[in-house]
Image 1 (cartoon, helix red, strand yellow):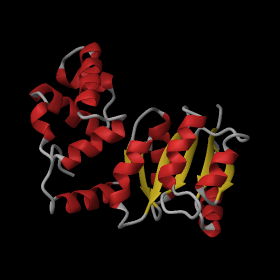
Image 2 (tube, rainbow, N blue to C red):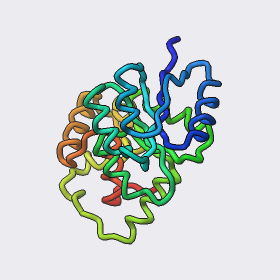
Image 3 (cartoon, rainbow, N blue to C red):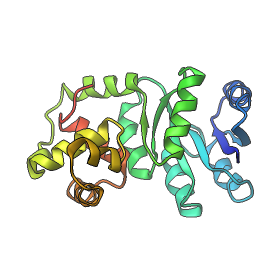
Image 4 (cartoon, rainbow, N blue to C red):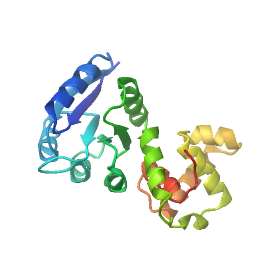
Length: 213
C-alpha cells in the first residue's frame, strides 16, 4: 500500500518535530518535507512530492491563506488541511475560499489528526468539532445572511447530509433517491451558495444556521 505523503508547514520547529515523529509512527504515513512559512512551502512543493499539507494559518513571511491559494496554482491535486488555534475563526472563511479542505486544532490528539488526513484523502472535508462550536458561538452574536431562502427543501435536506459527512451514494441511499440526483443537487448547492467545495458548503450551512453542532 502506498504511503500518504505529508508536508508540515508551521513556524514552530518543536511543533513540527513532534508532529513529524507521531505521523511517521503510522505505517501508511510519511512526512516528506517541512516548511517554516508559506514561502518555503511553495518552494518545497516544486521539488518534493506530497499528497497533503498540514498548514499553519498565522506564519511570518507568508501566511497560510496566501500559501494555500498559491500552492493550488502550482499543484491542483495537493490537499490542504489547516492547523488552527482558538481565536482564529475569522480566518476560516478565507482559508476555505483559498481551497483548504478543513481545520484541525493544533492540540488535537494524533488519532484525530490521522482521521482528518484519511477523511480529506478520501475526498471529504474535516472540521474539528471544537472549532465548529466556537464558530457557531461567534455567529450567534451576528445577524446571519439569510441566503438559505434560496435553497429548496430537498437541497437543504441534502446539505444537512453533506454536513454529516455522508458521500453522495450514502445520501442517495438515506433519502431513497438516485446518486445522479444527489450529484445534481450538490452541483446546484455549490452554484447557489457560491461555494468552491464541500468545506465551503459546510461553513455556509453554519453561517446560515441550517445545522446545529
